[in-house]
Length: 129
Image (cartoon, rainbow, N blue to C red; front, top):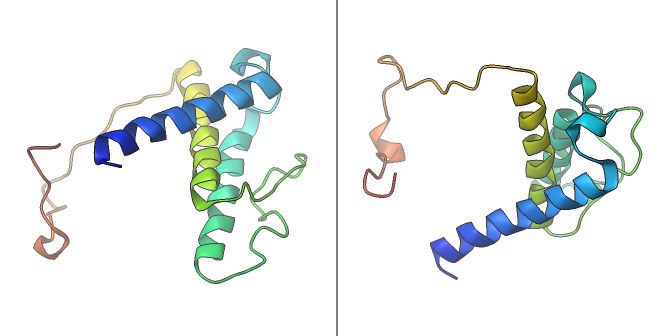
């Protein structure tokens, strides 16, 4: 697989998960769980457990991390690392939509003069950027 195929498949996987979530729970205007950042919290919980598993915790998904919405059920391991990342990204995407619908600012700030690149981490690839 080359980088372009990987990018395409990434988009397809996230889009398919978003469609599953929308089918299960409805679109944003129909949902009760969009308040109080629950989708964001669910995404963080998924990433938290995945991070723990990647750092050697074999039972990382045995119980929901504390940030998982307390009135939700169903926290689980979706299998592969990629599947767990896709679920988390879909939750984050739902939260982005909620914030956009609420009229929040989506301005991306540029790097400040005091935030210089460290050469040892590599410079940005201006050709692919």
